Image 1 (cartoon, rainbow, N blue to C red):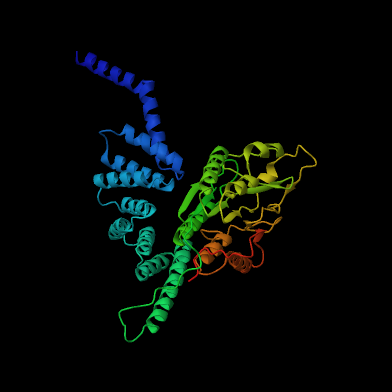
Image 2: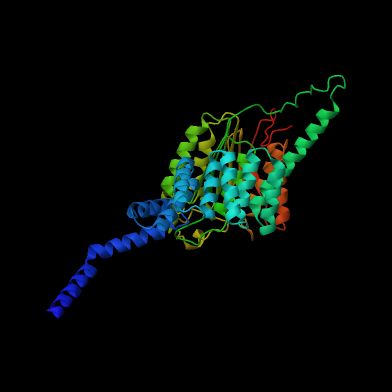
Length: 445
């Protein structure tokens, strides 16, 4: 009798184990968890959402990880309110996890809630003192609050941990420049006070740039599906976006690893937004290609097995230029996309007269527009040895200089890149601006 019962129990266990629905559920859960750890924001968002749905009443640690992962994905996609909600929920489940507080700080920075960002970043530093990203977020929070000395001190901590950190180098340089300008202005005002009226100071000097709306679209394509990944575009996009925010751009939209459909949609949305903007700027980092004398941006899902595929799998540079056209004063497209292109070696020629060029072809935008290449037409650009390309570093370093007119700014960026690359790379600007007007990224004091 005991043997029969034991046999029956074993038989039931085998039936349950062999149930394909159970196996499928396990596979689904494993795949969701794998996606939840992806570095791609869309994959992580989908995977973590599935983990959260599947984990009802389950492990608190797994649920906290999924909420924190989704918080990061929402932050990358610019959904900062949703990111804050998920990070707070994660912290409720696990109150001593430094990375959740750091992600929360990043989300608050996106909302420009600098006091909250400072509190979250400081808690992350308490829990993990040598985690440089928490110090970086705390520096950005101090910057937002106007506490430049404290911001600079945090940047120094970051650089002590990682002397090559490009974000800290670029952002601290902006802060040092702003601090020097503020100190000069204060000294000038103090010296000019009338001795018989010590409580009344002259108003600060007016700026040469009036209040205007400036918007930017930043695209970094790194994770190509048919050729090796590019190491720097996502980081370059992040660096340029933060620098533009620091110099007062109203709206900076960051997108990474875009498919062709997604890139077309984003450009259309940006074009509509540009209609109400004074400045509209697009910065694209990733692969680009010249075919038949025309330039194209290469989305991450392109395969480009033949030259004909270019028309169906890429996005013309002309479309990006058209997207900034509605802006009222300054229209600009920056192409950090002149890298040595692996697609050229795999593409089959089907039309003998269609040329496949090295680098990008020269362009002639309409008056009032600028198109900047990280390398001159027909030449290729370098990715560099660090976290950012030489062009992105030079651009970020110059954008925050007060009173540096746009045309002069790009002349200096060109010189910086030529020096940094040992004359192997020369950026180039195409187009023209009105000689009767000056344009400044950082307002002239």
